[in-house]
Amino acid sequence: MNIDILEIAKASMILFAVIDIVGSLPIVVKLKANSGGEIESGKASLVAGSIMILFLFLGEKILEFIGIDAASFGIAGSFILFFMALEMVLGINLFKQDENTASTASIVPLAFPMIAGAGSMTSILSLRAEYESVNIAIAIVLNIAFVFLVLKMSGWFERKLGKSGIAIIEKVFGIILLAIAVKLFTSGVKSIFY
Image 1 (tube, rainbow, N blue to C red):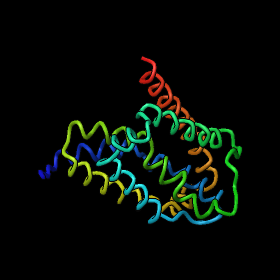
Image 2: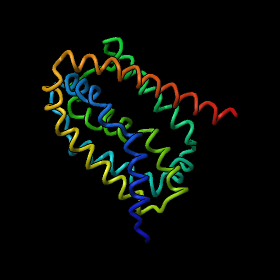
Image 3: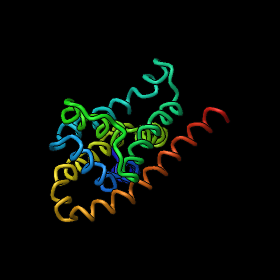
Image 4: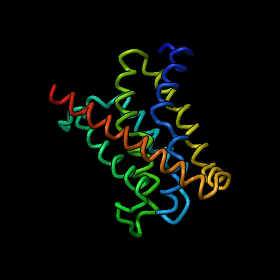
């Protein structure tokens, strides 16, 4: 076990860019509105962190065991992101809201696939080829701590930006999310067919 600060810093920056929780604030605000309550920051962070750590050590084996390759996993995640982005850009509701939405919104789609999604899973698999697992695990914990803080302060961000500010950011990040979904889809299709 060799803890390397440089490896931790590099892995943290990569995961920070992929998770992009600051850019996901409009989605968090929309999820809060749709669920009619608060997002459970601790629950979402704990679940996302657990999924990422589990995937770090067992990801390839789990995917192999259930017969799914990383490309198919990425394509499935891209569909969820695509429909979430359509909701943001077009101002429509595609996902059915029910009495369980408030209790599940912190887990699906926030913890998975937004935070611990196809992008972060693929990044973790890539990082394993370059860095030691312990350094990647520390990077994951640091990122999840930051995610927790941002989720906890989402109400404050919402108040500071106001409804019009959130609406503008929501449209912009909706288009960015659409682009990410398309990129995940096309890279997954290329991996499968080429």
